[in-house]
Structure formats: structure tokens, C-alpha cells
Length: 113
Length: 98
Image 1 (cartoon, rainbow over the protein chains, first blue to last red):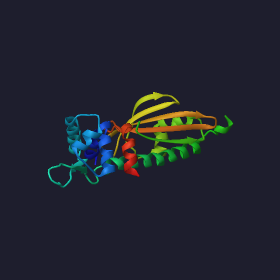
Image 2: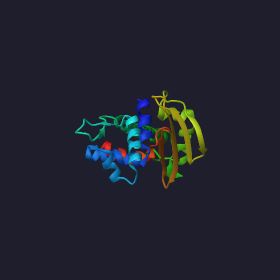
Image 3: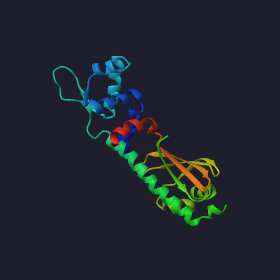
Image 4: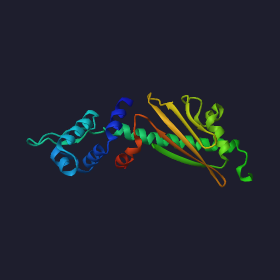
């Protein structure tokens, strides 16, 4: 799993690429012209960011309608990174509950300080 | 930044500190199978930062802050994997997790 989440997190570290992913989450598919119109960057920069997202396995070409190249999110691509976050949160909730129990069990009573 | 969780403990920061810095203390709440920790930053009773290796081989940083409360302590823990710039991702994943 770690060989998957590394590139995904790296690709998503960039705010422009995050914006692209968010618009894909919202709209389903997008194109270079659509993104170029929506973002304050050049067509070349848009294409480069899309290539990075593609390289991380986050997006793919949607089946074509005519000449226009449409991109969409690759199904399940975000899942490993999202589960890392969720699992880590749950692990710390459990660990902190055990920390609390063990410290309080061993405690010099704090209320009488 | 990273994954941030916190807990309030009914014991003074000194007690919490002991549970974090001593191996014996850690064993009581992390268990015996926890990976070894490499301490990076050490400010008694206030702040402890360590690195450790996750089950998948990725090294992450764990940052504890201990804040004294009128009747006890608050522990705020932040876990960040160096290869994973989590701070910037919360917005992206808020959408996915929902």
C-alpha cells in the first residue's frame, strides 16, 4: 500500500492539482480547455499537472466523445490515502484512551496538587 | 500538521511525560509490539517528538504537546508521515471521507 500512497500524497501536495481533483469530484470529468478557463495558469501548465495526476494513478482518460480528450478520476485511486488518514486517526484515538487510562491508574492524584 | 488528536487526562503533565518518555510507560499504552521510537525532540513536560516505522515500512513523525490544565493535562498528538504532506490534504480528503 505504501508504494501507492506516496505518489498520491505527493501529487495532492500541490494546491492547483488539489483544485483539479476537487473539480473532478464535483463534475465527474474535465478537459484541458475547461481547466485552463477555470484556473489562472496556462494550458501547458494544466497539461503538466494532469500528467502528474495521471502518473500518480489518480486520473485516466474517459472514453472518448469525438476528438475532445476528457479526464476522470480513476476509481478507488484516492482510497488508500484516505484510509491511511482514517486508520491513523482511529489508532490515535485508541492509543490516547489507553494512555489516559494507564496514567490515571498510576496517578498521584492531581486534584490534591 | 497531520492527523491531530487530543485527550484530557486527570493527572499532571509530569505523569503524562513519564508515560511518554520511559519505555516502561510506553509499553503500558502502546503495547509490547509497538515499533521502537527514535526521539527527535525532548522538552520535559511540554513536548516530545519521535519517529517510528509503520507496518507498511513508512517512517512517520509523532509530535506530542502536553498542556497543563487546572485539573490535569491535555495531550495533543500530531502524526505526519514525511512523504505524505498531510497538512495540505485535509481539504481534499474532507470531500472523500464524507
